[in-house]
Image (cartoon, rainbow, N blue to C red; front, side, top):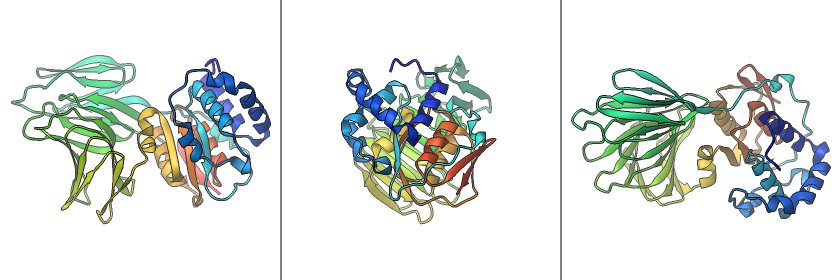
Amino acid sequence: MNRSCTREELDELFIYINDEHHQEALSSFLDNYAEKAASHTAPDLDYEHIYSQLIPPRGRIITFRRLAAAAVILLLAGSAFWYLGQTGKQKPALAQTNTDAIKSINPGSNKATLTLADGTVVTLDSAGNQTIHQGNQSIKQQNGQLLYTGQGNTSTVHYNKLSTPRGGQFQIVLPDGTKVWLNSATTLRYPTAFTGSNRVVELEGQGYFEVASNATHPFLVKVPSTHRDSMEVQVLGTGFDIMAYADEATVNTTLISGSVRVKEGNTLQTLQPGQQAVMDNENHAITVRPADIQKVTAWKNGVFVFNNTALPAILREVARWYDVEIVYNASPSAELYGGGISRNLQLSSVLRLLEASGYNHLKLEGRKVIVLP
């Protein structure tokens, strides 16, 4: 409650919370401190929406008052943890946690590499503050963000690449003022100055864009691929997310605000805010559906959010953020997960939470997460 927990103490807290033997103590705590917790300032969350997606563990009834209190308490602890439940059958009791899982693998952080047009590679991280000179243009690195102070020499345009590794993320403000958040294992290729009729960048991985408005020079994001034509997202001024990882079955474009058009081959789809275009990498078909905005943008806000999500999809996200390999020694169970976990936890805590909410056991060996029956 007083925000004094260390990271290790938070890990221990979540282990206790997910142990059924401590449910009575947890319930008593929530009942006693509900009013006190509610009186504290907490992030503005739609508790009703969260509550509507939760499934009470083992048939226990969780009142909304106690759920809200729990959410406030845990958010104040700095972990943004929501109950992680499963749809469908009840799960068996959790087996003893493998001792290898105690070993610490820290979450990802702000880190990237900037490759200049002449091949020079600059390492970027959270702590770095520096000014990079490229011709007559200055590029500033400040606290996990790369900032172009303005358009460079428009007569000689160069292309730079900003790349985040697995276990990394970074932000960039492009020469036109467009802001981009890059998730793990992502590369953004962009010009040092935008010239011509369109502002064109290329993305591999996942990025969230807040595009600087310029009606006469539309913003264009290309998603290159070796097995299909490049997909394009055409923009005027808007906020949107593109997920285009090579190990995912689809490329997802989610519109938060404004308007975008998604083009692949001869297919063109226009999105409205709150919609998502899903392009199948096999048949190139594009489907437009309502978007789960909270889930799509959760990574940018430091949270994993799941809504009827299968374990393999969750583990792909985990693998990219913690830079680990997923090995399947057993088929993943069919239940779907709902809820959320902070991306600031150590990997061992994330695996315990997933294991406690599903049928598969998860063993950590070195930098491999092994899925067991």
